[in-house]
Length: 268
Image (cartoon, rainbow, N blue to C red):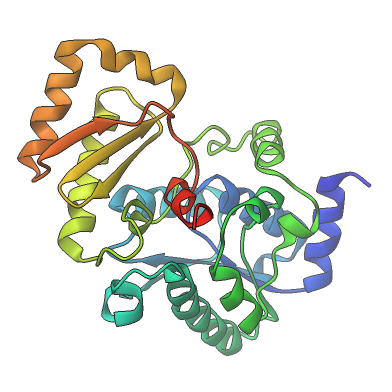
């Protein structure tokens, strides 16, 4: 069966859904698919705003939901108040998702919606995802993964559907830039956000600035690594990131990859 057709059947079977909507490639595709499969009143997109997400991501979510004419609600979460989250253990994502899905479950109950859905896809099974435990606790459905849809499928289908998000860089919460065991605070997250914003303004679309205490480890796509061979380009980035508080600025020659901080876990 065609994957998009299977996805539509899965969504129709759920009847009514609260979509955990970040505004990224995956959740935007899921929201569009839900709107196409279900009556308007049976789909509610909910976006969480907090220190762990950038202002630009929230603006993107609002813009896309408005473009679709989707019912959209913004909630404000404060993961840093949770000491379990702030101390940044290897299962940090569990505590984040537990708060989020708990809030979404309450919204679903009050709105009379049957299920919460998230945009996990088939490729996510390859990475370490402690948040999946919270998904099971709150009976969160993952229609994209159930339909066998990969990240490449999502981008391809989004392009066919002429969604502006089809070629957006991948997004992830800012806490994912901090190695496990290193405490997370608002100042660190803001420093990371400002560092990544600056690198992007130099013409780099996909970037992660991993914060190893006083060292900024920059990950960019392989095609962009050559830009750092230009001394003026490097000096500009080094100067700005040091002004933000980093003592050392390094480039990861392996390039950008999802979940690079999980690589240390695999070696233990």
